[in-house]
Length: 176
Image (cartoon, rainbow, N blue to C red):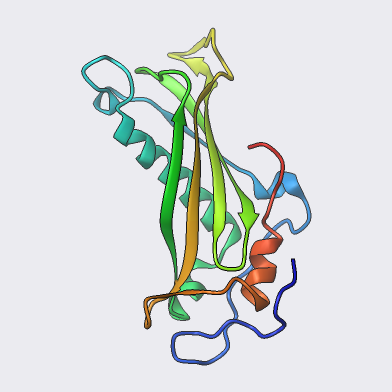
């Protein structure tokens, strides 16, 4: 993919310093892992995690990823917002109370105007202090499509220049 050499413009038209990335070129560094424990209030009437709760779990994982790899304050100062525009979510195995869940998050694709974050939730090693008999089982997988939006104009920004290079360094083709 080719990136424009011009840095992205902030909402006021000036050029921007969009943030930093740790671990450029090291795929292990660009996959984040977040661990949560299922609580009773996460459950539906059938005793497993309510489908809507998965969106919250995935959001927690994305926040961890973004805080580790992007300068969110700099993006906000420059009038740039990361906006979800599409979601594809599959469920594979029901999570229940006290399950430890491991959420992996990675940037899997970067296009001219959109990016896709691939996330997975697996059962963790423990459940109520015991080894979980299904440890590692895939619970759910989701692909979230995002665009960067200029907050002044409300329009999607091209993913080129400095921000394209920054995001391109975060792309990991490894499975989460």
